Image (cartoon, rainbow, N blue to C red):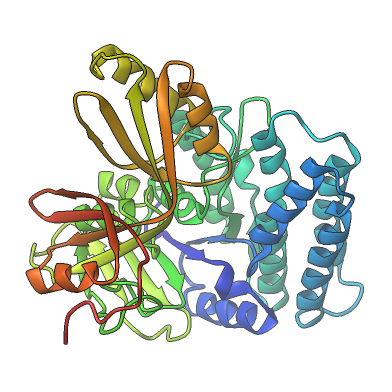
Amino acid sequence: MKNLKVFKFGGSSVRDADNVKNSASIIVSFQNQPLLIVVSAMGKTTNALEEVVGAHAAKNGKALEILNAIKEQHYQIMSGLFEPGDEVYAAVNDHFVSVEWVLEEEPHPNYDYMYDQIICAGELVSSVILAAYLNRIGLKTAWLDARDVILTDDIYREGWVQWDETVERAKAKALPLLEKGNLVVTQGFIGSTRENATTTLGREGSDYTAAIFSFCLDAEEMTIWKDVPGVLTADPRLFENVEKLDRLSYREAIEMTYYGAKVIHPKTIKPLQNKSIPLRVRSFIDPKGEGTLISGDVEDNYPPMVAVERHQALVSISTRDFSFVAEHHMSVLFSHIADLRLQVNMMQNTAISFVVCVNDIDDKVERFAQSMQKDFKVLIDRNLELITVRHSLPTVLENLRKGKILLMEERTKDTVQMVVKNVQVLDWKGD
């Protein structure tokens, strides 16, 4: 759609009433052009809803108590935005009632399915609140259920987008709303199967949702509004002397996000690159700042950049007999990795062993190990961190290795990866 901009606001940007008002003030300045807004759950709501899922699965009687606390937090936020009795309260309550219905049933045998049916409430209620507030301040705004647009397969918690159908749905559902002059507010992170069961696109997947809509509707530009000034050379919570990058190529952004840079979800860039849609990362704290522009026309000359991916596990697999790890063994291993949608961040193999570094999320590593133990010896080393350095210098690597146990290292032309224990806050540039 001509002149369409797609905005994504994360949980921090709508974590309380003041931040909702701040996000709305940013939106006001773009109200005279087509605008689709993707919003995440408020603050730490997703984490809290994960506790609801866990409590329900454990049948410990705490699920409803945790849900009621989440509901109260949202009502408190709404009290700073709306008058008592506003119809938004009933709309939000309806989404929480849907979760209560799930909790009235026995825990579903498929944990991932149950997770998606509960966790989606966070994005649904935050988008209802934001849309209602935008209407309240005079912006003509339509609320759109992303599950009516984004079609996925039936792998819960890591749904794969069915692109052709999703493009058709976006043009049928979102485009008419935009053409009528509405701002459109929708949810990040969620989609649905052909049977209308809710799915999610992977943790922190709201950036990806914005990219999906941008691709489907031929957006002019996409913007992610963050609490940082743009894309930085490292996480300022872990490292000193970080710098903001003014420009970044699609390729560099893909590499850094895949290896753990948290500012953008890893799947976000490719749909934008395929249609040459520029991406801006800007600060909702300083909305006048230029941020970082990610596009195709960027000189390939970057300073060292560091990404740290925590919650890693190193899984070592070896044959039980005296045979080598041959092609047929590898086929079995990768089949199980694909079935579990394990994210492989690094791997090495020798004649008699195969070692893989994966995200240690939920019970996936345990399930993978159990599926392998019949035919292989399996060892798991947990609580590790993966450090990835792009465009490294010797002094940078020397400083990053200090105080760490190096378990595995791999080098390519522009990238060094290290699986380590005991990551510390360091002046990694050695200044």
